[in-house]
Image 1: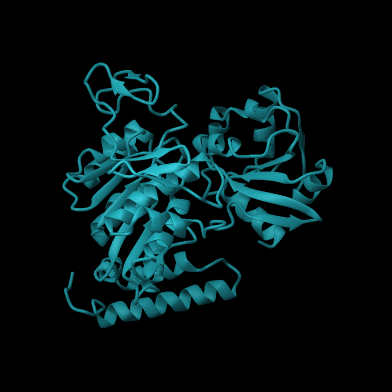
Image 2: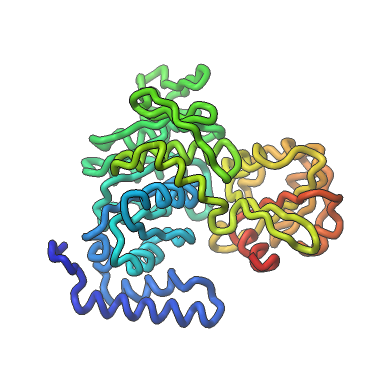
Length: 412
């Protein structure tokens, strides 16, 4: 990498221009934001472009199975207190989308980048991050993503010897094992609601012991590290023991955990917790998630849940029965085509809610709900589900492409 004030060679500048043009054509054709196709075109013309674009930036990478888009947004808001930020705010989190995002940040000081778990090591190698936030690891897209222990090992190898400050969740044994290869780790007690992927020790395969909030392996001694930051109720505890109140417009315990990790990251760059947390309050929705929209004279709250851990967190924040709930599941390329994960979700938590089911794989979901003894109706589309739903705000929970379909339908 060059140390010049302008790291872009003529070839790199051409690649950026071509990428922006491709993205504009994609947008004009109604094919989405164009960030992915724009990045692909740019990287074809200059394979080293991502590294070149990152040279003048303080890069922060955020990776996890769940919560990375929201946490990326919270960190970006916090760091704007210290300078201009560029970020892949719409969630295009593979190298092409990341390249597109950085290409638009020539005046930025910070780059806050969400990274797909599979690509973390490669993106870290290219961007030389100052900080890496690791939130959680759980089963996801079984036909596409690696088994969780393999993913943790991939992270562990990629982080070995990294100069970055790694901000890692002390309550997730897989994350702890992955981060432990790094020489500079800041542990955050962010909690772990979903534990079904961390009952065996990632270090030796032994059975994990889980007394209360603690965890350890009785066979090899691998154990929960002592955190320096912690989520405690509605407060973040900093390394000095000071408690800072969390005021978010985003709902749920999971987002308080995201805020705790975000405050720890902001502190790495000199932004005090009080300032960071105040700025996070400005975030009302993230790429449509948590938005309340009007559709057919009804209020619909849009919630994204892509895997068992995500559905568990989402169930914990919906309004109580008899609030109607619409569930929509697809199994397209971006979702993973294997829907066996539905059987890992505890749908008995929806007891008492009127449930309406739609999406490409509505019959897969219907069978799962039938086995869980839930009362539901299968619907052809969102319009029918809304018509059938009893009065009150409707909670709409969908996986990735189903969520995008719903956003288009409601004009969000």
